[in-house]
Length: 196
Image (cartoon, rainbow, N blue to C red; front, side, top):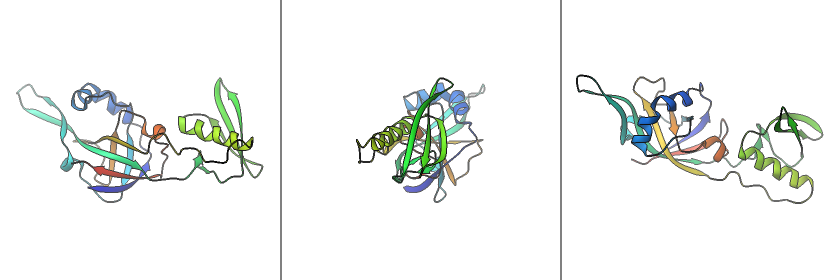
């Protein structure tokens, strides 16, 4: 089954979720997951449990098993091709300046001579876009940068038995920080293929 969706912000509990279940996730999935999840608003309702191939469970003192979560193998593909930096569309009239702020690499961005944003450099995707803008300013590059290092990722959707998510969204676990490595931001379009 293939479903379209959009990246959404979460309540920032993904890191806590991974920490809580990390030993059992490693045992079930065979890898140490990134300490955070990617949240996707689905184009149509999907029950992750129906597509699950693995569970996170424990054995009670009476010998019965209790399932905490269902895991479904998925492939997430980035569909958005827009170039943005901090939600500012890159259209060709930008000027970027690099500087240090509190010991960290930072930048300011101007469009048509007017200041639009500044921030610290937070990801590989940010750094790649800033390097492209600087090369373009210096007349050294006219080609657009790679949108990201990867465009798809094999990962796992998780559904907690007592969790807050419903069938209109999916919470994704992967080895990598998908936002950073795939250059994803809120409202970017993705495609989720349930592999079972």
